[in-house]
Amino acid sequence: MGRVADSTIKGFMYQFNLTLNKILKASDDIIKVEGIVEDIDVSFNDHVTAIQCKYHEEQQKFQWSTVYKPILQMMKTFCMMDRGLDIKFILYAYFPNEKEGKKLLNEKQMENILKTDNIEYICDYIAYLMKIENAQIEQLLQKPRKTKTDKEKIKKYFAENNLEIKCDLKDFLEKHFEFIVGKPYDELEKENKELLEEAGFEKDDVSDIVYPNAIQKIADLSIIKNDNSRNITKDEMTQYLRMIKTAAITRWTRSLSNYGEVIKRKRKQLNTYLNINKRKRCFFIDPVLIENFDNDIVLFLKNYVTRYCCKVKLHTPAVFCFVGYTHEQIDELESRLYLKGIEAETGYRGKTFFEETFIKEPEKRINDGWMQYRIKLCTDEAACIAAINKEGQDDIFLIADRLPVDISVQDVNVEVVNLVKLSHLEYILKIRDEVEL
Image 1 (cartoon, rainbow, N blue to C red):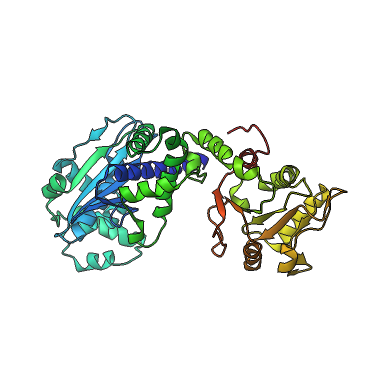
Image 2 (image 1 turned 90 degrees about the vertical axis):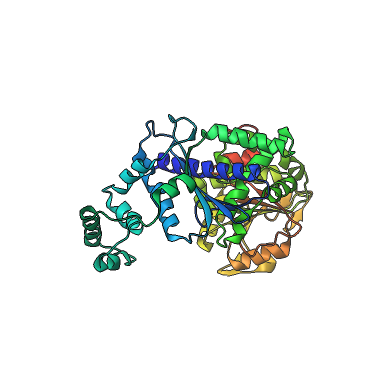
């Protein structure tokens, strides 16, 4: 499963890189991330270029059957859409042993594809490409869910009848379709960094700040539901990137080839904030996303307190908000910390959360070096979020996919450090000097 997950992430990263490549090479084109038609839709005036991206890193030998599905998907879309639309489909696919550039798909090869005996391809795609003159088969095709028997009847019908195709096959292949064998992943990434430099970004910043944030911007756009909100132009992308001054560490930028450089740059950037003693900090942590969380969290919190809440006169207890945690889990964590000699405030007295208790500053005895508590723990339930907002934060550290909807970030420094290991977080926070990346 690990290899499958890695391959899937690499496939998405390849698509994000291709999207960025199209954006940076555009002039006035509008790029739609996760397009309506394909993975990437490029629009200029009334013309649309619809690009589907595939990454086959481990397939040593190219076989046409590997690309049957995306070709049939494109042809189905072409047959079903308004003929007045000026559109071109591009299948951009990487195969390690294929020569980069255009790959010809002729009518004979396309006819072979249409003769496939793959029952799913027949029912999902080919059935919509042919002129059917059988009411029963048409009725079966209209069913949103087809049984195994339904599919077998449809397949048999196509095997026994020589059907006419709905669209002009030659016209589709010559004017509306192109198959391009893409660049290797590393070369596409390298080209994108060069394009960012050409766009006016400093070379020293491109690798660690600009490029990772560009990839993350595309990832963010890809999950937006509203179609028009996924549109972006080259000018909009470059303007956005010029406003970003810090490295982003997310589930996507962790996959970059220079992740080690990015994490070191982030550590250096945080140095200014971390050296300020009197600063309110809040950490949003999703335990599900962190490796060995239960085993490592207590030691991490102890190490944090030792470094950043040891000066009774100067330091302020940080808030650690655990996304998805229950009150009972917070209680257990509080008990484990107590056994390590660390007092924590949760805002709870019994089963009730008291906002004023959570917000109240801890009592201190400066001469004795005593502080009532050195850390705050909470869940992401509404009452806790409201208390965090009321207390007011200087820095928010996000070690999760997203912030709670109601959290206030106005005039707050938000640092995205979505790491999978607490040891990496300790390195970013300068709690430890070395870490294995």
